[in-house]
Image (cartoon, rainbow, N blue to C red):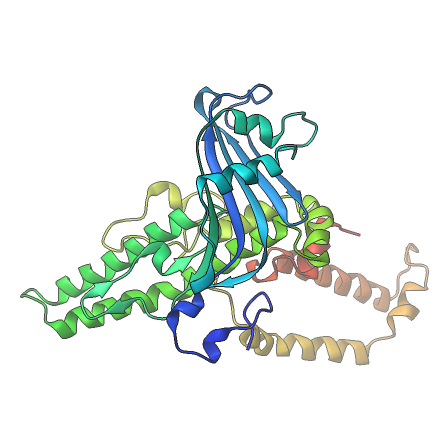
Length: 355
């Protein structure tokens, strides 16, 4: 049995929950004071290389917030995940001191390192546990859904879990005006896990995938990073928004006014891990497939139609039918290219590179 990245899932052979924790990457992160060459607060840069990537964020007073990721030599399980000392962190920094942190710039990681204020080197744990509650105890945040930080999803995911737990407890208290029983509490905590785990797992998958793209883990990810992502235009923003629009919220409060305005509205039925069923969509599309087959068998062949002089003022009924059918097909393509379920598919690529 394998996971999302083609790795063997040891949980299929062992019930030890700690086997869910793995690490394939390490991260050296820290804060540095103003560094010559970095003087545009508010900028964010990502530099990618094979098994190595950096993220640099310039804040107020040109303070630099930096991350350097590197692939470990192998995949580590929970009991063997390495721990690093300050000496290890310094050796790591010196090893990559000449690595450029942004294109068309002479600033290197070594320059940032010289102005460091604080730094830490650690292995990046990845996990989504199957059990989040026990008795009157509930776990929230990274201890249940640990992800790599490239996408910046971890903090938001922790807040969403806290909101989901609050909703479950609030609902329990609304139904039980008196002191809730142990059974009531257990049921509420189980509801918190069932409501939250699917979306949390989807966000973890997205975050960990981005880490592997940044590290150009294999030829597929390298091709995506160099040739696909730069040509996606607004698609990247849409994918980022897709991770937010279905976020958890406090059910007993109205949604913030800003969340129900704009192009990507808050919608708890959509977002990460909440996709339409392809099987359901297939059955709904069957009548249209039947109509298409009927049209194909009851009208002249397409090659016959387009070979005629379509510019002639005396068009035949067949030619008019061809134009009508083509217009319908084109309209369907435009609609399907905007569907969230067709993100990064040929249907979406069509509208990015129209004929």
